[in-house]
Image 1 (cartoon, rainbow, N blue to C red):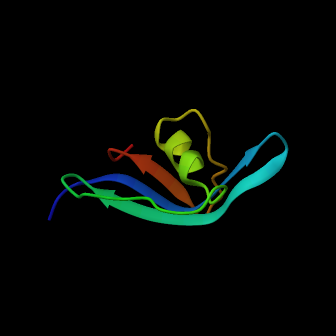
Image 2 (image 1 turned 30 degrees about the vertical axis):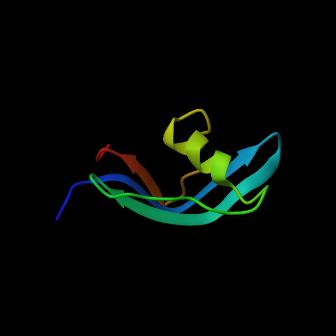
Length: 70
């Protein structure tokens, strides 16, 4: 089984004083092909911003966001 490089569990994020992600969970493994589809405003770009760390998650005791295990 391939190593998990992105692991988000019950993550939230705010941008400009409003929630843009709520209770988000996703796990991606090295070598997997992944496609993100959705209409305008569905959160595709917001997901990329979380991965590239230009948007910081709100992490609670019941949540986590890990990139390459950290």
